[in-house]
Image (cartoon, rainbow over all chains, first blue to last red; front, side):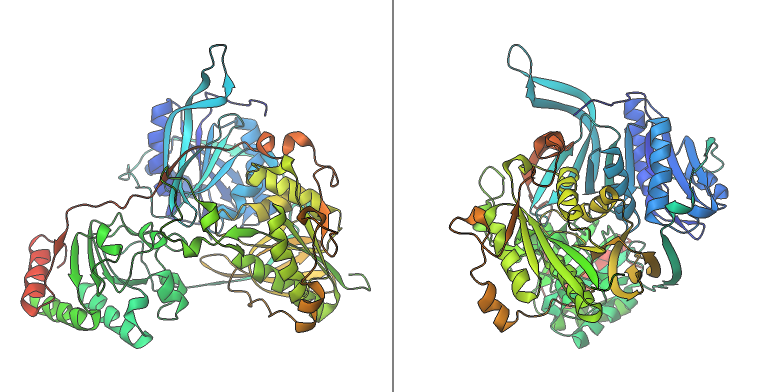
Length: 349
Length: 277
C-alpha cells in the first residue's frame, strides 16, 4: 500500500445529528478525541453535516472541538448514505485529517464503511477504546532484521469473535485512520460554557445524481427507555423465566428510580423489548448501580455493563460468570430475592 | 424491471459459531482455536437469502448466492441451493487470504458485478467480526446506493420501497434499482429446505472440494478481474497488532446472604453511601 499520511492532520469526529438535534455520541467522541489530539499536538475538529445546522457548532465547541467543519446543504437535511459519503470524502481530501472517528450508531455504521471504501483506507468497527502508540511492522525489516517502527498510530481496540477476544487493530499507512466507537463507552468532557472555535464552511459539492434514495417517511420511536442516561439499572436474563416474572424487575427499578434492561437471551425469549438489550449488540451502559437478575454473564453481555460502578448479581448458580465481574453477589432465586429487595428499598426511604 | 423479473445476488458467509463458545475455543496463547468451533451459515445472511427468495417468489427472477472463503464454505452454498437459490458460486483463491473488510468487499464486488444484478443482498453483519462493513463497502464499489438495516421490501416497477431501522426509528425509502440491501434479523426467517431440492443438491460440489465438482460454480480472483494489489494482505490496510483473550475484571467481591436481614442491611448500606436514594 502506498503511504499517504499527514502527520499534521487534525483528529476528526463525525457530529451526528438528526432533525437539528445533536446525538450524544459526538460529545462522547470529542471527549476521547480531545485526549488523542492533545497527545498528537494537533487540532480536534467536529464534522457537521445537515441543512441549517450551523447553530449546533457552539455545542461542539463546548464539548471540546477546536474546529467545526460545516457542510450545510439542503441535500444533507436527512441522512442519505451516498450524499453524506460524497460530502465527507470531499472534506477529507481537502483537509487530510489523520484520524476520523464515528459513533457506531446506525448512521455511523452506514457512513463510515462507505467513506473508507471510497478512500481505500482501513476502518475498525465498534471500538471500545482508542489510544495513540507506536507499532512495529514485522513485515518491513531493516538491514539488521528488526521491524519498522511506525510512531504515534491510532491503536483501535475492540472486542472480536463474539466478545471472546480483545483485538488491537492498526492502520499504519493509508490514512485517515478510521474507527467507529460504541455509544456510551467514551466519557464526555465537562462542558466548557461559551467556548469558541473556528467554523470552516465547505461546499458539499452535490448534484441530483448523488441522491438516488428518496426518504418517504420517518417514524421516530419515542422510546421511554433511556438506559444510557440511567443511574440505576435492573437487568434480567433467561433466568427470569417468564415475561410475567420480568414485571418484578420493573417494580424494583421503579422503586429505585432506575431503568430496566435485559440480556440478549431475555430479548430473544420475548421477556423484554429489543431496545432494552445490554451488551455487545445492544447498548453499553455504565450506571452507578447495576442489579443483574438471572443473567449468567456471557462475555457479549459483560462487554456492555462491566464498567458499571457497582454491580450486584443475583443468580442461583454460584459458578455463573456474572459473579466474576460483580462487586456483590446474592446466590438465590430472584423470585424470592427481588421481592425482598423491593421491600427493603421501599422501607429504606 | 425486465420481463424476466429481478436478478438478485446474495452474498453469504460461513462463520465460526461464536454463540457456542466452549472451554476449548481459545488456545493457551490467547488466539482462537477455529477447529473447536462449528462452522455455520452466518445468521443474518440467512435473512438476506430469504429477502432475495421472496423477491423471486413475488415478482419473478433469479437468485444467485455467492460465498467467499475456503472450499468448506460450499456447505452453506449447498444449503442456499436447497432453500431455493438458482445458482451458487464459491469465490476461493489464495490471493484472497488475509483480506480485511476493504479487500473482501473489493473481491466480492468484482464477483457480484459479473452477474449484473438488480438487487444485491447481504446480511447486516457476520457474527465473527460484527463489523457490518462489507455490505456498504460492496455497494460503494458497485456504485449502488446501500439501504442498510432492511426490515421490509416491496418492489414497484423497478423501484424498491424499503423499510429500514435507523436506530431512532423506522424510515421508508424509495430507491431506483440497482441497489444493495443489508438485512437484519428482523426480516423474515429463512424458509426451510425443500425436500426435492435437498435430494437434487446434496451432492452439489465446487471443483475445489475435489472430485468432479458440479452444481457449484467456482471463481478465482483472476476470473473476476481483481487487481492483485487490492486482494488479501496486500489490499488490506488494517493490521491486527495484538490479540488478548478476555480476562474478567475481578475486583472486590462480597456475598450478601439471601435473607431478609442480609438484604435489608445491604440496601441500607447502598442508601448510606448515596448509591441509591
